[in-house]
Length: 112
Image 1 (cartoon, rainbow, N blue to C red):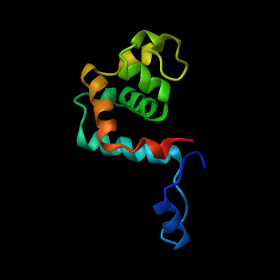
Image 2 (image 1 turned 45 degrees about the vertical axis):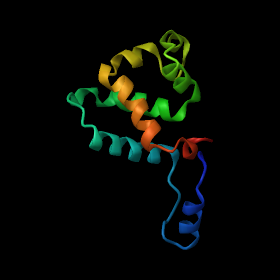
Image 3 (image 1 turned 120 degrees about the vertical axis):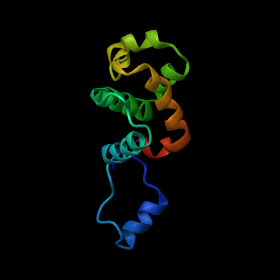
Image 4 (image 1 turned 90 degrees about the horizontal axis):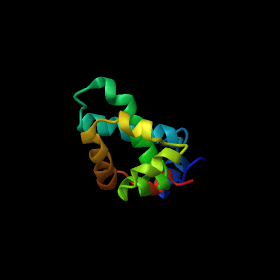
């Protein structure tokens, strides 16, 4: 597995309620779908940039530290999420994504 499993997932698998465990990327896609359903972007063309930002923020401690610490110049040397990627995200989503993740997403399940 590429992520931590919860006790609930293990039990549902044991009792045959789910056929397999979801991968980290499948869970990220689900979480992002919930985010988009809740906070519909005005510009549909911005969805890929927001998705990249969302996934990077959820999965990378370093990206979270940079964004939360407002040290955006450090993105220039970050291979996972760059300054170019950050600038592609609409201004309002630069703060909306971290707030949403902190309120609604359990980061523990995405740890390796």
